[in-house]
Length: 61
Image (cartoon, rainbow, N blue to C red; front, side, top):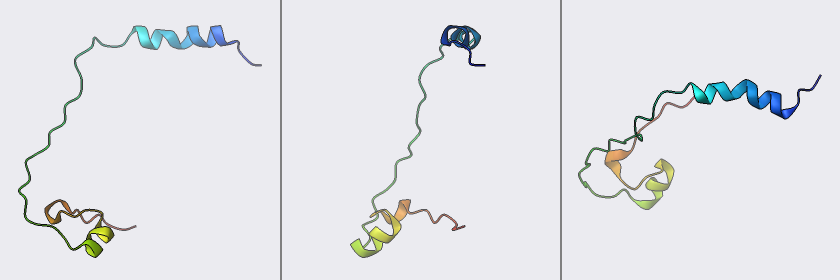
């Protein structure tokens, strides 16, 4: 049988009441990357970036 929305809300509301205290927002670490030039545009379109030093070759599956 289908439960009404209020009982479903009560069942899951304890999850939000038991959360840990707020510890702050996430922070990103972005290292400084030196400018080493640009890739030719035809190659940049294939690789997804115009910057050769941030090009990451991911394995193909």
